[in-house]
Image 1 (cartoon, one colour):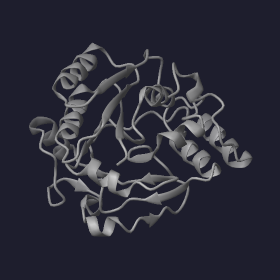
Image 2 (cartoon, one colour):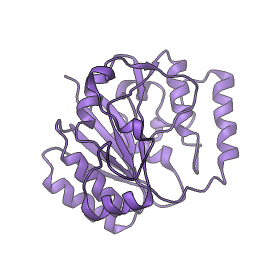
Image 3 (cartoon, helix red, strand yellow):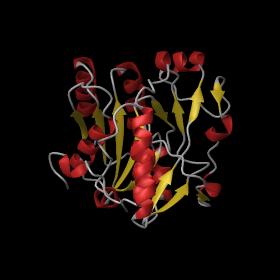
Length: 262
């Protein structure tokens, strides 16, 4: 069986990260490792990760970089460089996992395939309840948006669906680590919100990797928060457009800039 790592990106919201890590430690099938990709959080987050690492029966690695603005692509590359698992699932530090999340991703993993899952949005009231109690919602819980995405029906999940369109967000994205290395990871020229995930997937497709959708499994619950600034989106859109136009496979500034490439 393949080994599986969770790459959890975070920035200065330790209360949410605590609930995400709680849900990760409660998995019916534990991950092989967790890499907390920290884009410059303060010492409270570092202390939180240390506490969880002491409790877990598997490695939890805190991968941190200095806070110099939104540099998600770079910190994800640093996490990939530290990873040892065969298969990586990328998610955010504001997404609480269904207890079978890891099991579902392992069951759905296919060779030469990048997989996109869904997420269930929580209302502010439902978010406050999760933060307060730590209880992971169910599909019938109040305060769920996109409730259908909360349904877990494993027999239907085996029928991996076609992934139509090019839209991608890295909130529930899985691929083989070897494929991530092949395309030189995420493009670090992306700074600020938007585009790095779509660029990563397009380059995987350019390299011959197939894309599929995971439905009725791999459920995530997204905690409500204000949207990130879109001030750099136009610049990021230009980089993505270049990738689409040129058929580029490898990131120009990518994983090979990290401290070590596995």
